[in-house]
Length: 256
Image (tube, rainbow, N blue to C red; front, side, top):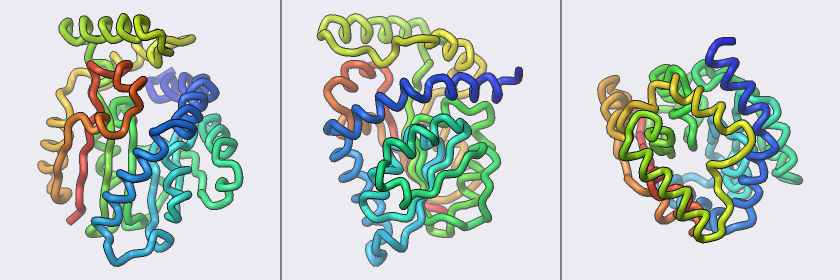
């Protein structure tokens, strides 16, 4: 089994468990935080456009949290994931909104869309888990319209596999979560398998978002900016404790 198939099989098996995390987000402060932030980013970039005229691709949609809140805001949303079971969970979580979202099973590095198909391309917690992130970025930019907006949210999730300091910080996070009596998002059935998969992914050993910015500028994709620790305004308190050593960052690109 190659890395792609190994990775896909893992996430197929994680669909129901990951869906519980998305349900927690939908019921928590994250729903308001992400909705407010994404609307501000999109409306600032397209001040003259009504939401229903804006096409958004949610790459690596998983169980659907982001697709759901974007559809609630009135945007035309396409949710893409390589794991069929994730899309099944996404439809269930969307409930009545499912009919307003287009669900597509596909590879984030080989998108089944024409060039310049979307006004916005969104991704959360995906680049780290892709074998060829350069190809992913090239594809996302290809399907983005000129002057389109790309918003990528991610973290150096598995840096502890290659950095002893990060490992100590990660272990301290686990201790802090336990001391607070909170659920630990990094502990679960078969989670050790992802350590093996992540060790094979190039992003694990890269310093990000510096790498993302440098790569996107090297291919002259457009205007790039990054924002560190965006989780400070998007996360719940539980998430902030769980992920203290791996702060969420944002990469924002406006296509030429």
